Image 1: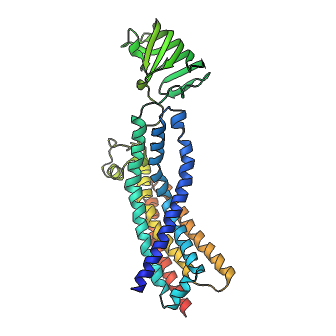
Image 2: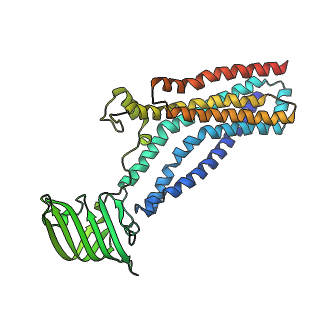
Image 3: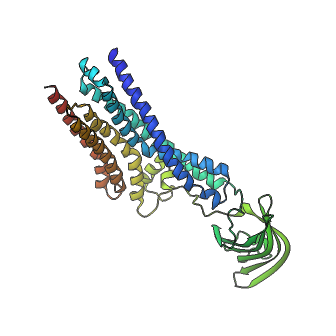
Length: 376
């Protein structure tokens, strides 16, 4: 009964430290990334609500990457705290075996393994895919914020804007629009033949998601290279027809894990994000990162368990802490490096998955021998 309370206390302290560290690291990284996402508003003209929701959906991706490091810091700092508060000395005096505590840390690590596995394989890809879908389906909040004065703006696909100046009423003057996508070909007479359209206007303003142009000319070029000019006093262009240059197709990291497994098994280029060339390289690397990286968490738990072994000399104790924490961190870095090469060949993939599996028994036996030798 007493041991169960002790184990529960250990788990609670480690979990609280883990949540605190994970939140702190994710908050810092998310803040930096959210600043980069401001281009959605400034450069691409999306609304503030779209920007906030898009940034929020990217939090899971950041959290997934910080879970192993947060567990390492939480476990190591918790052990150091227990030692400083003489809680471990009291437990050893009561006859609690150190190897049993190490076994507890090892078992706890599997819970965090499942947490990261759940985030990496299901939650994060789904969240990132929703963020991409949000950008794809959202409307532009203000085209005027995209178009800069005296600057050729190519924020829209195959369409170039140029505005000489803007007056006090936020009206644009001396407007140039070059349409090579056929988006505005419906405003010319021979719209079925028009390939390129150039629009010049003295003034223009935005009203109800429409660009109102005043006093201008529309010059269109048909397939035969003939030019047709149409003068107008006032015309309207729908902003909803404009397509941003923002990548709207799902990336590999936004594709579901089930789809990626189908991509490898079926080897079909009809499946989303299954390229014909170098298909295995990218897909296998993505799957290895999602499924393989959590396996390194129990290895980190075993390495941190070496901190339970006592040392009377203060200097050696501090060095030992740094050594084992650094060793655990190196294992995580090594995992990140190996996963980048996991898709190059079958040997690289097998090596990435086998490394933590082979090292875990090695470190466990070494830990058991050190604890046994310490008793003697």
